[in-house]
Image 1: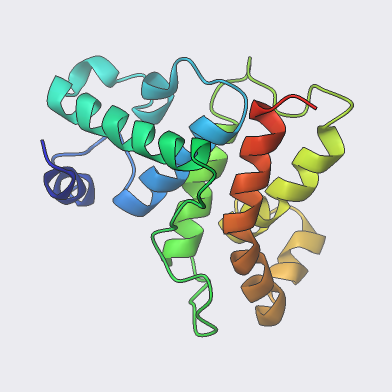
Image 2: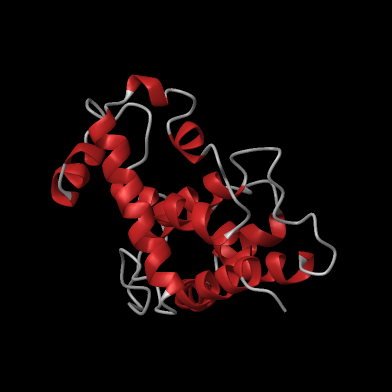
Length: 178
């Protein structure tokens, strides 16, 4: 299965009832690489229905994930599937930046046994580096403070612009020795 075929499949709820759209998928795959190891990432991605998905789809997702990993390993920035520099970026719930962040957060918290914050030496850095994803995703709707931040368009643009660098920093934090 080619990447284009995978992207087409991911856009269709009929052929992709368990996964995310392509933009959220990119966020999910990115988080499954940059953070703590997520050995059951396919199960988390497909919400426990990975056996109901064709091997071609799983192989194509794995290849895409491997490509993102290799990019980071080669010390190159991950190309985000939206233009974070666009001051006109829509931060509504249907926007690409929000979808990407939702995918990222879903992987980050997808397995309760995988805690990105369990190391006291890196906990603060992880919180700081993932805060843009949390705010932009809108997934923490109960927080009045985060809601106020989401209302500040200049802050949202700054947060979106920080994503690429934060992804690289998270990868280095979790995948290099001091």
